[in-house]
Image (tube, rainbow, N blue to C red; front, top):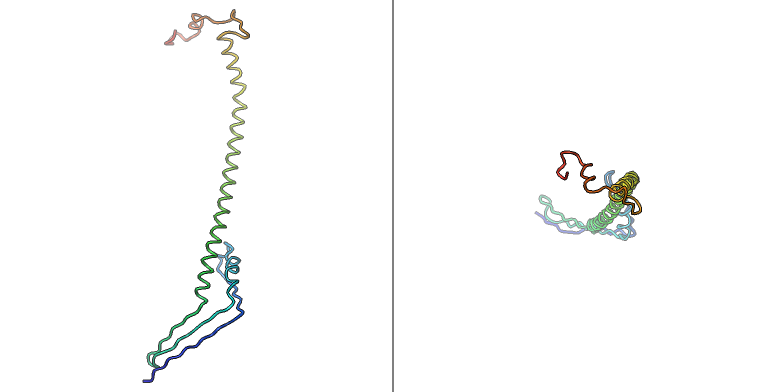
Length: 156
């Protein structure tokens, strides 16, 4: 049996790689980022090494394209992931800000509702305790105050 050995090498210069991805990746705008990453690949080299016999041929394939595409994909995935993370963070921050603004409005509404009630209660308490402007003639004594309490009160 005759054995053989040889290499076939192909070098392509001034190559422009145009990536294409499926729908799942396309929605993350991977194509644009991948084009940016592959823009610097201008030469593709491929080598096929053949050896063996006609009954038992062997071959080995090498190319710089695989590592270049893998590196570009890694860079692209990082870039797209960071962009997506920033967008998600901005959207969640906006939702938090909206919820906090809504909560602030609710608090302001409740305060506006409670303020007149609190003022009225404060005025009534002032009347019970000592009247207004130091007027003591309308002031309740402890005995009078005790009579105002319910009959079953512990403080009566």
